[in-house]
Image (cartoon, rainbow, N blue to C red; front, side, top):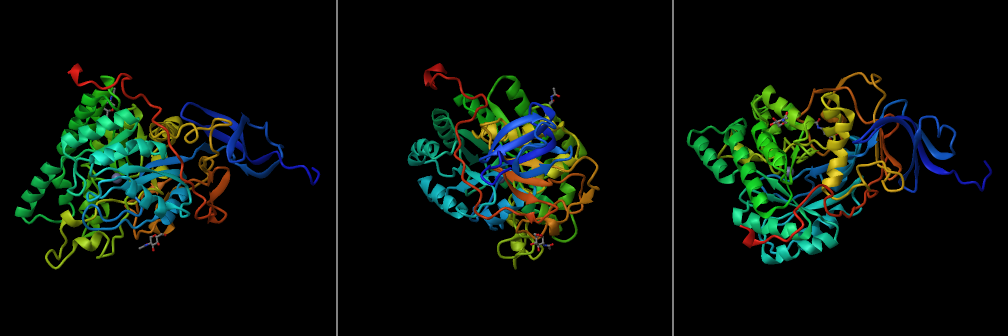
Length: 497
Ligand SMILES: *[C@@H]1O[C@H](CO)[C@@H](O)[C@H](O)[C@H]1NC(C)=O
Ligand SMILES: *[C@@H]1O[C@H](CO)[C@@H](O)[C@H](O)[C@H]1NC(C)=O
Ligand SMILES: [Zn+2]
């Protein structure tokens, strides 16, 4: 090579077992200008000129993980607690776990009548901070006519999804408000994510527990039994059917809610669903640890009763009931009596009160390794649930979630060759979040991402420097409408009823 000759490729990845949602095969991959340029049979690129060469040594090479449910730098909307990770620490944790794009939330406060302030404030928090690419779901808590009119502006600004809540005083919408949101979302080509738990019932359950002074962390689970999730899921589906518009039920924890979703899908309704590792791994016993330890695993919906529930969730992942697998990373420091889990311990409640425990667990870094290590999904299904489908439903495909030459960003997660990594326990101290614990401490994994690449740049190199990406490298990505099936094409018409 002479001095003037530029290498043909910026990076090549040799000897990969390349996995997409459709296929597994032995390929070399060439990258140029941040994009996938070429996939060729193994060996084909062995001596191609490139600035950087990575030998995958037969390991899985996948489109980078997309985590479509991440809470970062949010104000205390749910009562006590402040999300411990900001856009820097949360996205650093993401890349160390093989995730190349996150979608977090821009939360509208109930006192705001517009959505655009929330979008601007969140954009400022993320600007020049992120280690991975990102977008926002608009969290709609006050669907004023102004807010609804702004849905078209959200689309212009590359936001094609919103999230609403059927619980939490500060966020809960009534059914008529949900219908307003769904109808406007239908018109503008927006996917509506719904947190489905019946807020009124859970307040009533909480009162029953308080009357009996049952306040320990484990009663968080008692206050929110499966039926309250199943009821709300059923109601959300009915409201979505009335408007004929796509909805996605977030963080489904209960097999009975999954069954309701499955039935709707079988009817041909555009109903999608998400679950999270906590619902395949944790149980309500994790909330019943000595002292206040159980608070670490308090999230909503709560971890369910046991193995049978976990099996139901795995079945739904395997058989297509679940469209995506996200983390619902919602980090609170445990040992912090101001903004963390221990804020629930007060003079009035010296043993703590479950109602005041900030809801959420960290998990953006552990999502992929825990799920792949469980060995319950084919590698294609794993890619579909953790990367391709999130890209499709949230309008990022095929820029993200695919390896299509010329079209897809060179976002990749490269694992270790099989059986070269001894199984090891997850330990908080090796993670990159800004939290003082992981709910998965001691859980064994047999895999971990060895390299993470974003737009052709190596940002995580586990054996040589760890996080090698730079703060601020992550970019906001504009999103289009969902490419999964959506509403009937004719306009919604009250006279059809
Ligand atoms: C698929 O999984 C769902 C959720 O667990 C379950 O309700 C349903 O029975 C399963 N369907 C089939 C055909 O296995
Ligand atoms: C947990 O891990 C984080 C990230 O490495 C670290 O900052 C924190 O000190 C750890 N806390 C404990 C109690 O191990
Ligand atoms: Zn959430």
